[in-house]
Image (cartoon, rainbow, N blue to C red; front, side):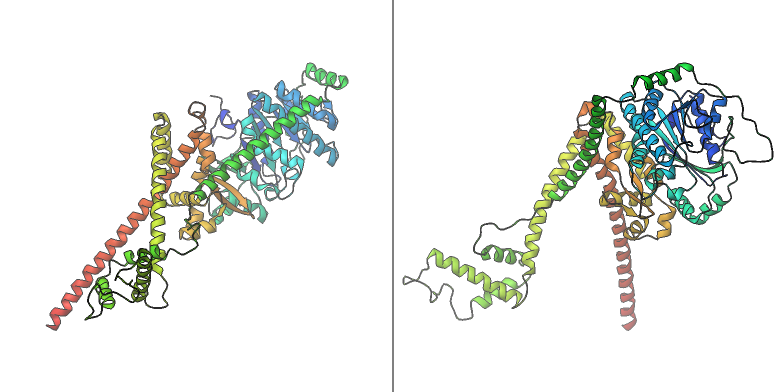
Length: 592
């Protein structure tokens, strides 16, 4: 296994860094540029192709040990380029796996942005075709992906950092002002090296990123020495010391000691000749067909995102569709008889009610069967008249039972109850059908579902409550204050038990909303990512079946928990009643 020698305090392989977004933050002089240089050295040790976006001309020193191409404008570049040459160099770099330092220190501000935009856009499009590992390092990233501002350059860098993994693209985001960097990039970074900061705004960002108490974060971060940092990844958070880089560091802090620039390796002449030849022959200008292909690729990605959003909205609409309201259609006359019957049936359990009505209907001395004034000449009523009499009788009976002016609450209750029974029946049938579909899945898929469910159970009671809360609120983004309020637990308890493990598993997504760290359910994406290997053989319905089963298992934990709480409550009430009876018996014996 190819190990990376970054620090004696951490141990991970080259494979773990492929497609990762890595954040390196800290004030100037804290060691962040050294950490970035060490990471680039380790990648170059294994001939890992990369591009370092160098703002201040500090990374040419990597050529002391490694053969790489330095392009841009300035004293230490191998090849001077113009903004329109950038995309062609990017294409050669990723196609031939040539490491590049893109030195932007000699460009004007506007040319810097244009060069970088063309370079990264070409890398993104080529990565979509080649699907090979490639790393992009960006110094002073807050200049290009600032918080709250939009631009084409920011969009492409954010896309590489958040979605580059599928294409093999990784990003190393380096900045001395963490509060000015786009928060979505930092919160979704898979690996962070947090060096010392002093600004309150930067410290607040660290508080959001680290799963510690604010006082603990401040104490540890302010005490970091040069080269020390807090390392944070999906499985660990700890203080480490990063080794010193082995190549020349042009960005060192000046001192009285004499520093000589070492002998630098020169890039192969064939590479420079290939680029020069391409420039002379005009090959850097893409054909209209190439431009259209790239545009199609971008539109296909946008369509994929839209389809995912539509699918999520369809699931929400499907859930809302389960709520049905029964309306009495095409009825010009109110169905008094049916409503009356519903009320009477709902009142059948009241003792003595029928006797009371019989006494009211037939006063003493009036024999049964006596004809009324509306009876026909032959002492009988017509069917229509009998129906009207029955309706009037039931209406009178209802008025007598409930009293004048009272609402027919029991009518509404009975109709609501009937509707609830119907909905409950449909819900039960639907659940049984989903369960049957799940049971028909192959054993290896069910085993993975079981393993996932057990892993969630082992996270603890509070983490389970947070997970269930976010699933029920999906796709809403919820702050820690909202979670604490709805779960009815102290805010400090929730802050001390942030759902970090849920984020690491991919069940929950962590985002920044209005400057505060918030969370949302990510169960759908989790299922699609972890069960994608089975989908080609089992079909697209697999994701829906697994998603419903996991939701059922996670939410059933809440029902069991509620049942346990109700059982405890009933047990306490029984105990109270027994004590009360004992006390009453004691009082009676005392009186006797």
